[in-house]
Image 1 (cartoon, rainbow, N blue to C red):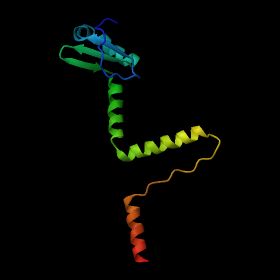
Image 2 (image 1 turned 90 degrees about the horizontal axis):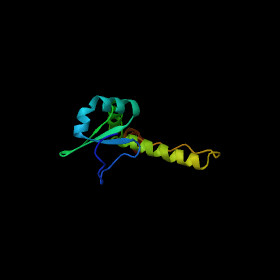
Image 3 (image 1 turned 30 degrees about the vertical axis):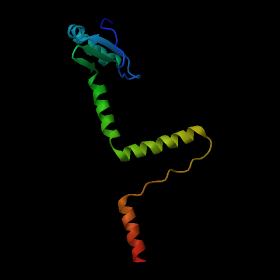
Image 4 (image 1 turned 180 degrees about the vertical axis):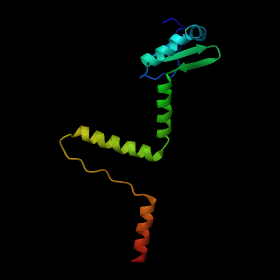
Length: 120
């Protein structure tokens, strides 16, 4: 693919194949680049004098937005960590039965328990 050579010192996602093109080349081939990012699940890096941008498909953008939203939730992150730990333990010893993960108590349950203890 024609375009400008990649410049160093750029963070780049290792999972998504990427192509680098100049702004001028991107203008000429915009329709082709849009088809490419939608068909091949690639990202196109557009390099110009005023900065660099990335062209991705709408579906990939929506998935990134959703992942970003979900990862902002501390409760979800705790749940993901517990599941990852459980999966790692299960993978390490697949034949051994694994204990059920301890569930976190919610604030309401803690308050109810305190009230019961006080009333005794």
